[in-house]
Length: 150
Image (cartoon, rainbow, N blue to C red):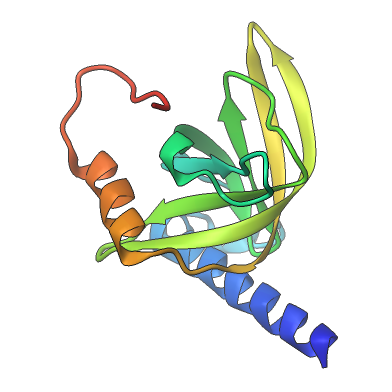
């Protein structure tokens, strides 16, 4: 029974990522090039790592840039390595946000202080409405400089 729920959550996450691929990148692809499993995908997302108790630390959410995306995962570019085994990724939607719980697959140094973080989604997660509103406001607020964690 638990395996069924795990796979159901993973399928929900896969559908969300597939939808983003379709919305953002498929229009520009050559129909003959559908063999590629990953699509270049550049968007600001929120990286939410766990606190010392294994819970997502929403107050320390950091904006990072996505590199590529597929139904089975995504990779991010960040100025430091990711910590822990799991993270939550906040994705801006037309209305509100979606949050993916992801397993850290790898964190590879790219040089010059940048790291590529490979993630595999495990499912969608719910966050308190107040937290979602605060995180969404970070995206909507005009800024001249990059946002850093508090």
